[in-house]
Length: 370
Image 1 (cartoon, helix red, strand yellow):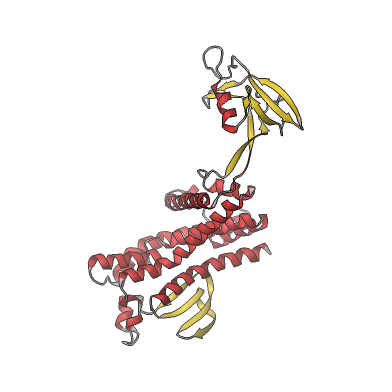
Image 2 (cartoon, one colour):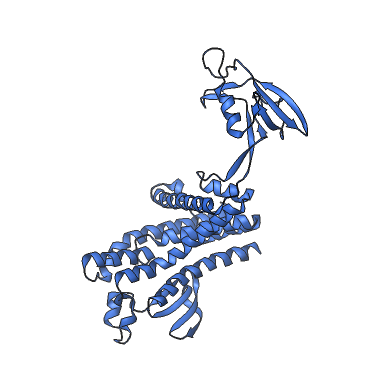
């Protein structure tokens, strides 16, 4: 069942991407010849009005075919159809139609991340924090959640102890950390030296209050005093404005990481081994679905964002390539030939195909257990 949901989710992202192009083209008065999920050969199709709707055999995306998508096609076009063709429109209209597809994907990611942050679940906070550490998805607490063996707090504090006061003052997360780090050793700060004065903890342990004095030790690697415990943290329930900001930060972190990762994959075999094809992406999505709806929403948001970002790369036949040439035409003041477009795009497409096949090879190796 998880596989079915995962595949359906990815298919839906493709459909919505193409629906963005379709709706924008119709709104701009362009003639849409075909709306296809997947690529030819065509498995099934039907026609409604002037548009043919189809499902292809190759599950590698989808496309919307607008009349007159190239200068060469315009030369052979029926004069009656030219006014509604793609290349008969002003560059800004063409750019809006092309950006509508990836724009839908980016909007989906933005909405899903916003919803997850507002839900305030532990799983959602953990997943978002892993993607974008700068997003403060947790509210730190004052309960002891972990102890480091052989450190000063080990054997003195217990898991679940709630620190209520520290050195006589009401305990807060920042206050606990600051109080411990402010302590000083008797002499010079050397690795493992003991503080001159203890830190006094008042803790609530199963409803009974205990007072415990612990001498911090200096950890040279960190540059401050420590006692050796971690505090609990609960998922932060974001308000709508805060969730919008957090979603934007998450998207920026993912976008920059995706672009940087792809560039690194071109030069590093280690980075290339981390790539996934659609097979691996589906498997990751299926695993997220199995973990629960919140994880699934985050992963679908991630896939949607990556789909949108990659489509904005400035190479034909990607959306970014069409945008680039519309801008070039506007700046140049005249048509740019298809030959020139593809000549420029060929290097980028070769590199992208290389990365796609690397991802497929990685997934085959993973699935075969190698």
